[in-house]
Image (cartoon, rainbow over all chains, first blue to last red; front, side, top):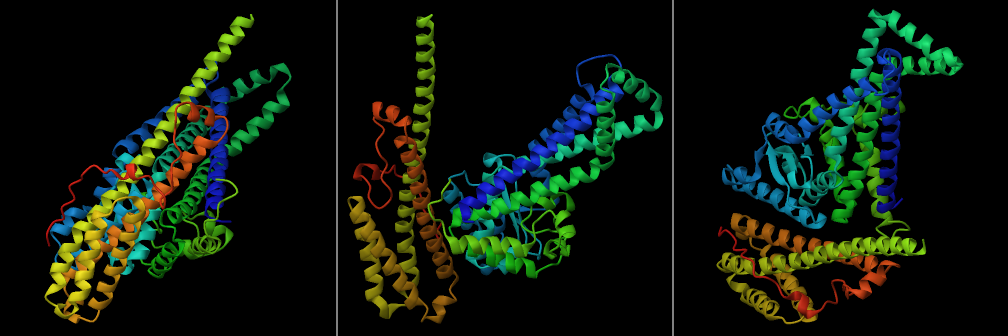
Length: 335
Length: 188
């Protein structure tokens, strides 16, 4: 697949996963409202709405202040400050180069220039944050600037710029909110089932009175399964979205630089440094260009390992980028 | 009854025309902004060159011809009128700079000089920005042209005189009129 086809395929798959996600939430929510809350014949799905409100509130909070919190927790410093206080000329040149590359990618994407930050950490890594292109930040570690050539750095910054252009931070926040809402509903239900089983039985018997008994029982079984599996399924779906967006950001980044091999080579170098990035905490892992926990999980192929990774296997990302370079950006069949 | 149907059709058509018109305006403004970005970066390159030449002059006393060639190419590029000439003179300037940097490799004291390295980085970044700005302009101009030419939007585009956008190599001189932008570089 060439670059534009890869982008389209990744967008489609994101929507497919999101649809499964919303369906799971709807099933669990409907079950809770029918069997547990549904005593007073109200038609308002109270529990579902309450869970959505809690999740939505968390999402809003994190969209407003999440970027500052992440940057503070990594102790990132604005690049201008680092240039002014650079200890050596080499460092100043490196920081200035990063600033220039961010400018270049902002021009290539036609978006406002994001704030550029530097993290004092020797492991090569980078992330983007901020709720929309007008409030975006790109942060890289000093290790990244020391390890990569200019061309490779451009590939990495383009990948982060692509996350910003594709609104991935917002998407992942919505996903996190959905996971939270699903967990909340599952938690409520298990408590009620454990301590108030009588009410549930009463309500389901009443629903079964109009002959749809079999359907109700099937739905109850599905619902119970969904509740038991909700924490696992929710997490797995969130990870699936995260991996799709990484592939998409690689493809969009390649569109910005028109040089997929720059990022491919950067990923090879980053992969060679499997040490963890101590400055970046677990909660921000999905934002990074490579898993900051330094787990070798991203580098391991295999169905089970891939299921639990925030990022696709490096080897596959590099292979996809090399395919783009080989196929070039021909006028695509579909744009 | 027929009157109502007719009225409904007119209202729907008007709404549609307004939507198309606004989309075309949006794309046209983006395209023009993209064009100005190119000129901003070209001007920045012209501003950087005297710094570079002054910094390397002492060490490259014997390469006076190369330095003069760079300054002459810069002067020509700055006074170029019309996009065709500008394209040619900017290309010559790029070549002259390339020669200068190739020769500078022979001077170890220049290769180690922080000011030269910094200027080289600034010039490389500016060249990149020029080409990315052109890339963005061409992408957005293509998008605008597609929006302008596809049926049925082309009826609106025709009625309101939306001109075909030309891609980078061949552009109208009038479009090169740039607002002056202060891009004075912090002196190293």
